[in-house]
Length: 112
Image (tube, rainbow, N blue to C red; front, side, top):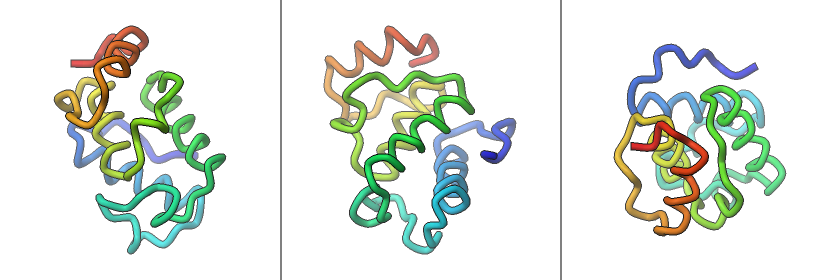
């Protein structure tokens, strides 16, 4: 079961929450879960685990990750910033494409 989300008020809280999920759900050593860690290579997650992680985040925060998310997001901090933006807690991440932005906005009304 993912940690509670009541205290998530900004992207740094979201980052910490996601780190706890990865640590607890996938038994990844927290010391390697740094902002710049690439989800698959540095964190050691396989694609199915990354997809599962997106599902956990989506369910906990009422978000919809559109198709192509894993083409836009490679690093832990990118995932965190994207989820925070889609939840309305952060500005639009600079790394996402305009087409992906439009898709996110269409399925996540809180995108700021």
